[in-house]
Image (cartoon, rainbow over all chains, first blue to last red; front, side, top):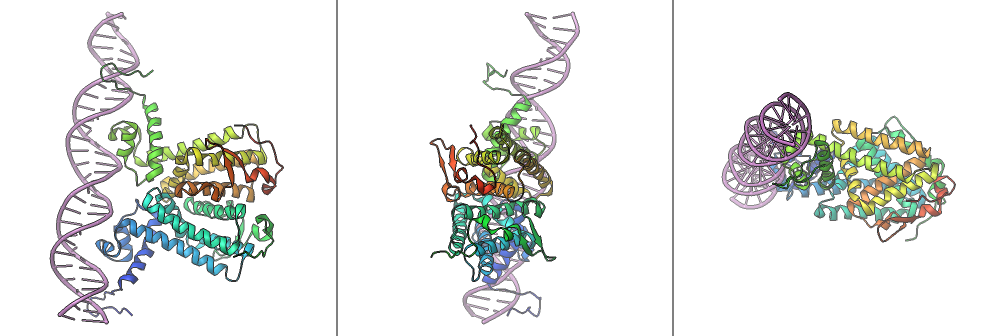
Length: 208
Length: 208
DNA sequence: CAAAAGTTAGTAATCAATAACTAAATTCGG
DNA sequence: CCGAATTTAGTTATTGATTACTAACTTTTG
């Protein structure tokens, strides 16, 4: 493991380790300013590295932004996977809704990064990749829940509203009627009591 | 009325007229690049005026952006008002859903401007105003439909998904199952056939 | 030692905003 | 109705700051 050098106390990471450190810092910075409102200097400062070094780790700013967005989508999917272990159909979808909603209390940066991604998607180069990330998540949700139509639409739609609530810092309970634990974890929501809203018997098994 | 001057052919508008011309150009430009990805020069060029003159019409770039965002929200509300004339409750909400969805065929810039607004809302100064715009729209929808809870949440949520569909240029029919006229006007949607989803009695389709 | 991880110094371009000026409308006294 | 006075709509030229990115060098580590 990387130990501080005797003389200066500096710790050197492998390029790969440093890349993820940069991405994590970039999540926080890009969440605030988006692609064009964030300077590479701010990211470098946050991660504790010189600004030009970012360009040895990433081809250019857009590549760094894209890596950051991908990281964000990966965190969401990872969270969905954990939340739906052993579940399918409506319970899986419900679990993912809770998981996503949890980000409102935990990690709004992840929600804001999504918004920044969509906002930057006007650039055709970026759009192609961001669509790939979106499609990947879409496929995952379809597979694990077997949902489609209105059911699926409302799921993603409510997710997008979550992003906006995070951005505008709207009161949580305005659109999402739920109870949270002291730690901000989502305990129950109105869907818990009326799963038929999503039009399925709770434990429908998807065909795949 | 502003007639072309004989000599130069230049047309001079009143400051107020020019301001709305600028805002209209700014909608197109900011929709693409957002607050930080759009140069004032690009807006000036599009409206056919010198770049420094923008700063006589607006205090600074943020003020112009904010005016543009407000204009966007106003267009949406205006559209909602026209769509819901004489309607209340579910039929009104359904009419607004159609109206908003229409923007996907007509005026995606209006949808993208919204996304750009949320993305820029990290700036506290901007956020306060953008929240005001949001709240105004929220109040209008609540008043005219009397909706709340899941009904209202799904309405706004599906709107936000519309914005993302516009940004990523996703196929329209992936999340919104509907039929469009040749002109891109929305003729019918799945909600038309199952209004009970929103907990209200089916009602007359709005005439546009 | 040699490769990999980092640095400092610098550059060319972009861009928001200011200053100082000009031309077209409008007002108004005679 | 006319033309000087004034206001209003616009311009050109410029600047100071920021910023993505390069080049060339240094330090650490296996």
